[in-house]
View 1 (tube, rainbow, N blue to C red):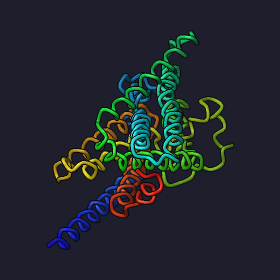
View 2 (cartoon, helix red, strand yellow):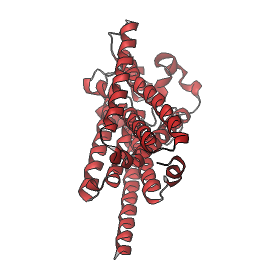
View 3 (cartoon, helix red, strand yellow):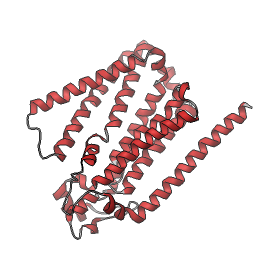
Length: 326
């Protein structure tokens, strides 16, 4: 009876992965055929414009990638308290110090990114450097304190349970950004908004998602006009970052309360909705094609599935627990 349950779980796991692969392949085929048509229909850009004035799209431009930083700050806070409460004396203080430094860096980076996007998208720039510095430091300190205190208040037992989820978050965050940014550097696909800003003849810079853009000299005029970011369309960094929400699929395995079909559906639905929202806004902004956002979501989703498989199926955290005494 027990073996049958295990086999059923394996079968359902494999079936979900196969369905995800089929859907991903179908979406990429559709994107390969209709990328430009979808952008023309959805993007809120007038000919000659580089930045959309759409308020929703602008808001997501500023805040859409924030989930990855917030998830990472939370994960580091979990590791900090696990080391503090349960770590071996030989490593606990080193781990705590490293976590505090990283939390400070991540939490400072959040207001830094918000400000940098604001200055790119708004005509009214913040010129008072002291006010900007105060904003970044104060927001960073508040965020760091919120995560550290919030995790501590969940209690020792829950802190220990959250360790596996925290490791999954850090793995997916690091791996997804490494993959996405690496592809961007190699592919150098021209953004739709750069093509739109070029006006007539701009479509000659368009390339399908499965084709490398070629030599940088061929689109030097775009880089001179709009900066290097104008040729970093594929895949969508914002969608990949928002895709950290797919790690929420690990929560039913972390807490028994949610470990049923309903809990798994709810957490997947929340993560899926978050990613779709950001993906739509990026196409609406003209910053990405449909294929860019689909591929960004694919990166984060399958890395999340891989992390779940390694942690919960292959027990990959055992060596860490033994070494650190967690």
